[in-house]
Length: 228
Ligand SMILES: C[S@@+](CC[C@H](N)C(=O)[O-])C[C@H]1O[C@@H](n2cnc3c(N)ncnc32)[C@H](O)[C@@H]1O
Picture 1 (spheres, helix red, strand yellow):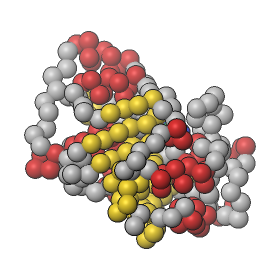
Picture 2 (tube, protein in one colour):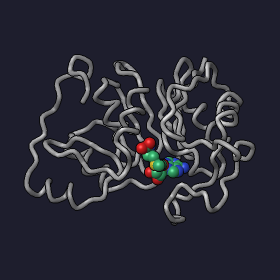
Picture 3 (cartoon, helix red, strand yellow):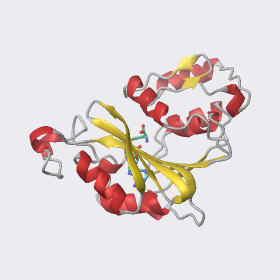
Picture 4 (cartoon, helix red, strand yellow):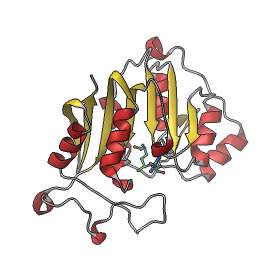
C-alpha cells in the first residue's frame, strides 16, 4: 500500500461477485491487492516486498518505465508512490495485468511490445528492469537498451539471478540449471545468468555510473545504476 501523503488518496475498490470469480480464475505471478483480495501470486511475496523496498518510496514528479511488467505489480506500485507517468512494456500482456488495471482504474500505460522495439526521445527518470535479463538472448544489448531508455540524471533498477560458487567463472546457463521448472516455450526461455562481477561490469560497460548492489535476495540481486 502506498503512502497516501505521496500517491494521493487510496482508491477504494469495490469488487462485484464477477470480479471475485475472475480474480480467482486467473493464474497470478504477483501479489496484488485488489479490493479485499490479495492475489495469490506464484512468486515469492517476500522477494516482491524486498524488491519494492529497493525502489524509492517517493516517485512524485518522476516518469517510470517498467520493462517486462508481467501482472503489473511494480507499475501499480510506482503509481501509488506518486509517479506522474508510468509506462509498461511486455511481450505477453497477460489477462491478469488487464484485469488489475481495470479494477484499479489505473492510469499506467501498458503496451504489448518487445523492449528492443521501444523508443523514447527523453527517456525515463526511473527504469525498472526486474527479472528480465536472463530471458533475453542478447543480454548486453538489453542493458544498452535500458541505458538508452534512461533519462540523463535518471536511474535504473536491475534485478535477477546470479551464478555463485564453482560456477562463478562461467556465464552460460547449463541446460540442467534452467530457472524454469521445465524448459518453457517462448517467451520465457532462460538464457544467461551472470556472476555478480559480470553483471556489474555489463551495467557499467553500457554507461551506468555508481553501480551499486541494493539487496541480495537468496541467489538474486537488486542493482542500481545512475545515468549522468
Ligand atoms: C520473470 S518475469 C518478471 C516480471 C516482473 N518484472 C517481476 O520482476 O516480477 C519476466 C517478464 O519479462 C517479459 N519479457 C521477456 N522478454 C521481454 C522483452 N524482450 N520485452 C518485454 N518484456 C519481456 C516476460 O514476458 C515476463 O513477463
